[in-house]
Length: 355
Image (cartoon, rainbow, N blue to C red; front, side, top):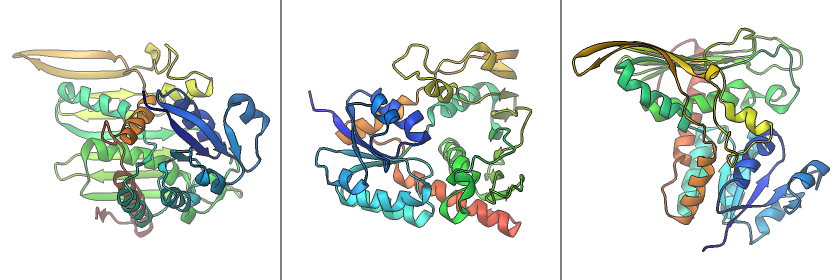
């Protein structure tokens, strides 16, 4: 039995509390050993993770020889510098999305990790959408349109750095949400031929000048169009996914149940974790040919059980050298390139080539 991999988390904000810390604690072979929190050992942190050390500086964490893996959950503008310092200190690294602010920064970090034979990854959860599309391709026929959206209704600003910072620092909904949607599209369908985007600030709030809406089209040589979008003024829920094929369509409403469950205190160790109620299942209407028999099927499709925990299980295995890394730094850097191309397209009012 090998000793567990000791993990240190920089930051104790929402992403650390809701996603990273519970998932790390639930992963066999990982030990949540330390946090970096500028406020020190707060009551909330100490009561939740009483055995974890608490540093007030990331330098203290990097100097600790017992720490094997560093997880960065800071504001986006700090991702590059902290990841570079952690790699230079000989630590494996996981970065909260988005990876970096620029493509060049991401590629540089990927090269550094490779030079030092260290694992560098970004938290992108792909399994749910991969299973969804792969399972529907056989029943929908050739897919011609794929839509993926993160919409909500919030006509005010929370005044956090994501809404009050600058776009050049990675603030705004494009960096925050399109990073996940772009990653999913690239994994499913590969690199597109063209990108066309509209990015704007719809709410016009005095406290938030960054983008709060985007619509990004990815066009492929075979005619497929992926539409990725998000907005803050959708009072009536929009579909989370809409997939159209030659034989039929699939529509699913509702966000992934795992985020709400993690906020409520459930973890992957709980039996009910990742299971959606029937009311959240997607709907399909398609015509299938089964051994020459035409079958018109219309109904609900049971959702695949969510498994965010598989991300950190894979990081563990990649560090141990028993499995290839599922989400690589190079892949994450190209997601940032896609975001930069979306900004270029929106600014110029023209479609731009993927390059």
